[in-house]
Image 1 (cartoon, rainbow, N blue to C red):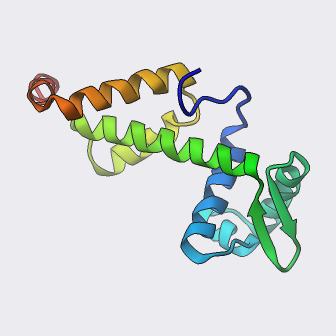
Image 2 (cartoon, rainbow, N blue to C red; image 1 turned 135 degrees about the horizontal axis):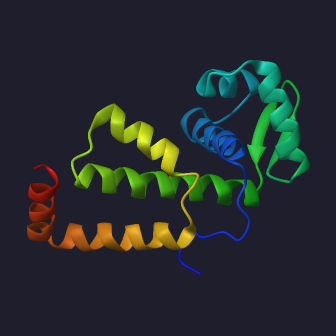
Image 3 (tube, one colour; image 1 turned 30 degrees about the vertical axis):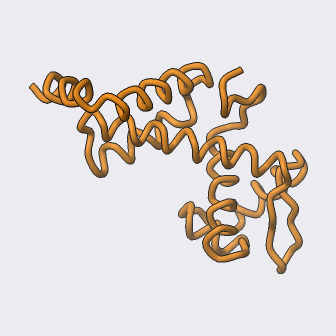
Length: 144
């Protein structure tokens, strides 16, 4: 199976929560319901419900009023989502999709693309990085 592939995929919303917790832990050293609520722009009770579900599935550990942390499997999913996001974002940038459009498209695509597709996009991105003349030709062609 290609790098970054997982056998079982979570829902896009669950992946968003795990990614948000991961980033909060990286950025602040802790994650709590209020921070996740602000990052995802949802109400704290909605976060509490999803956190309970993710904890029940074994993706995170939650101590009320103390915060949360990711389990090994939760962190694996979060890293996979982040990696998919990076690959898709770089690809869209390479073909000239800019700013907000690239961000919105990346957010839409990252949860719905199969692992084999991500692997092939990643290989294409690597090829284009190593072959800037091909990338220049592609950019010229798609910008017409």
